[in-house]
Length: 400
View: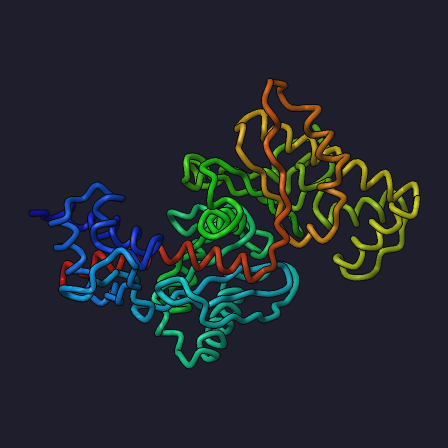
């Protein structure tokens, strides 16, 4: 018999296993988890009674007898909870709604003012976006059990604290608390690059790898890191800040306020700033269009543009080499809006990285490009929130 904390842990483990493998028979759950068949039967009965899972007829196989009771498998009850995920970018909020079994329900994108917003203003835009998302699926905001939020910047996920973000006009903001007050729903906040790594681990290119790194390149440069199958955040919640590693002493000004950061040479605003201020290029269009102008000019042979773009590639190659030398990952995934351009993953950049890593008689880690849209980032945020909703639902069974 299983009591107290052990029973709660068994429920969590079996619910996760069913979510990953379902529909799955009870006997397979026992084999995969090492939990006894008797305990599996008892615990899954609790999960069934709490309507977190459901029985479904097993597809008959030729080697199974038709005699006796119909065989059933277990799967997650999709209607048990609704979970939302969202990504805040510099111009919009992308949102997705999913069921408890991870299936897609609806998605939505809403524009926001460019520039830094007050915490209350950003929370208001998020609330309005979530209401519109819920309405698309015939629900209210109050029907959502949990919301995962991805935000660029330095985030303490455990405490919902944003030390710094390009989306907020203040530092050290308890933004998780601000959002919970505005939404009336459980909120799970994290750095957006971490949630891309979560998505890659859950249903992306990292699903078959225990150690990999995701580099996100958009208006800034972020990184999510998975070590031993677990997301790594650091002791202060601000680990893996690849964009703010230093590549030039007293170098270019980064939007974080420091100088010499990798982002200050590689991000879109950095390319535009360098080309216009140093090279004198006239770039009055929005940043995304201006980046295209700089890159096209570089390809057409403009010396200023070529210098700016080539330096960005060399800085990026140096940063990648440092990561490989420190962590030796199985896989490096490059993701984000800037993946529509090839200047940071051109053969010359990857070759420059390989020249700077420790040489042994094994190939360098594979570097792949995954051209995610903002909706995929939001799905990563929803997958992040789903784990918390699962744990909360399991804990509530104690009172059932």
